[in-house]
Image (cartoon, rainbow, N blue to C red; front, top):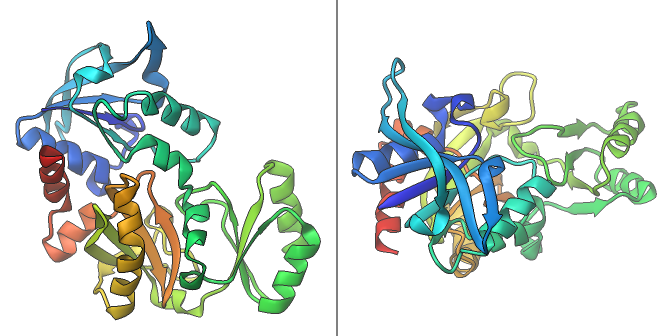
Length: 310
């Protein structure tokens, strides 16, 4: 097969923990042709979607020679068998624009995840489809509503609606005098609504990152916040430990899994704190390297095997 990866610049990746590189490595191991390009490399001309893509001649975990570029040229993306949509957010207009371009060919080749549904399912909005599974949540730019919500729940977490990796997330304690300043600063720096949620005390025990493949739970890790930190994201220093699925985790997966599969969201990461679903990551979920290390489960192998059969 010819498999393309739309991703952040390969030289910017932390290879050892990167799920995209694990997928590239598995593709190369199976002797598929691997192409890499960024969203900026996309172009539309003559009614077709192209990319200025690098073909990689070798890919390995050897730190002295991680990959080699065979050539770079403009290719028609329809010449590929599959494309992984794997660049990190922010989920801004640049991100959305790339989904519109890829949507033009999503019926012609396999694109994981389906671009139109990635666009339709922003992580912190999509989960509100299941209000009984999530923490108490407010999405607004109305300052009075934010004050009322904080008054009711005392401790709250404030997040940018389209951020990622724990960036710009604040834990506001009941008597925190910086609350107004934080809200005002966020308002000054973006035009989107904020998402405010009740603080879940179970975060001190970590949050679970569960990988669903084609709607089925396939692997899990527990992410523990580092000392004096409430965010468990690996991007901000969270520590991955071995996780275990319980009955509540499986119940949540059974409720949302069929919807993910129906929408063509093949590779998804969900986050659970305590008994609450806090995020559904459809853009570029991470964790498969850590799952392999801790549980000896190779999800890259499972995902590429699935792509070969689709």
